[in-house]
Length: 471
Image (cartoon, rainbow, N blue to C red; front, side):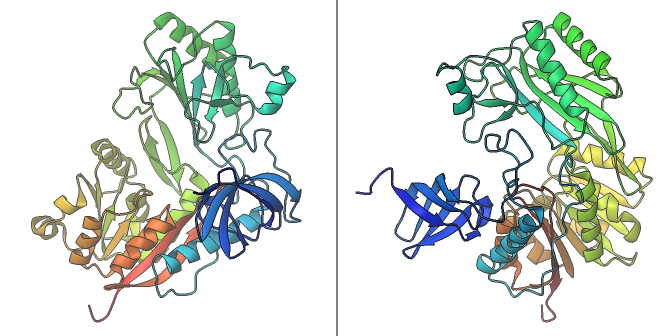
């Protein structure tokens, strides 16, 4: 029977592992540590899992601090679930992210790799996101310090902010967030202050009641600002009064929508956002390409680094103007459109029909006449008749979700046997798994990590695969 509540004392932190967990070794055991630690810290660790060769836990006391530490810039650091690496210099974050990619490709993929290119860091380490979603709650999450300051009592007050990690019903009230430029903080604080002053009800996720549910804000590099207020049910008088107050207070907003969501979950993809003000969408730019972004559209949430990521993808494709490019998981067509001028033809395939509708509209907006987009599963669509009509691909670009490619799609790629594959990934672990499955037919020619999300452990990676000569 294993002991519970085991605390390891004075553990020296030595490195970082996957998913942003710090790494230590004690008595031959590997220990994965959460809790804002930096290599060089010496901490006490309360274990949550304790196996023979490894353990997991959280730092509960610091005996000494690493000389690599920096002071976090956000008042919500340590409680909010975002920006967990603020206590590390950005240069060190990049080192660990580069190492994370190499570790995954070598340990999981067991691949023969070329020399990896240095990670491309973000020029903007604050105010880099173009989209944030905030949650309303009738009970704000309070820190221990806040409770103690209130003589141990827990006051009930509403919140508009972010979910606290691992607590689905706890929302941290956010005053200032550094992920987006102004007027995003002004928008959020204006709505919250008005709602409190006028006794508008904030949602209770446990009881499934209350009026205000979510607030989604998108701020584009074009200057356009789109706000979508998600409410539980229609209340026309209060809705109009609140949205008019918002527009009067923040006249820079270009589009306001509202979405009624009576469901138990927060997803709006099966709902119908209503336009209250403006054209109902925002426009964003990558290079000189313009993209229409609706309230349900997917778009890279870091426009600056999204452009960098797409440039790497285009460079890896090595296009000369004569190639047929298949863009898998094409979403709203952003990558396919971005490479279209260097290709003979682009064929985009995406499971979600609404995204394909956006892709076709984006192609038309940019006068891209050599791109066609199709809704459906690649495994079903790419049959002999499809290839006969569109031609065999010279280059395949694939940009799957975090779960990576389905094994059926990997097998389909082996069947298609295109000369080149450019694999764009937001999860190097699943990318490594997929590359191992492709290894018999393809060699890894280039590897380029790109940091899209400073102060987090998340990392994007682009890999160029070329078909082996004997295949």
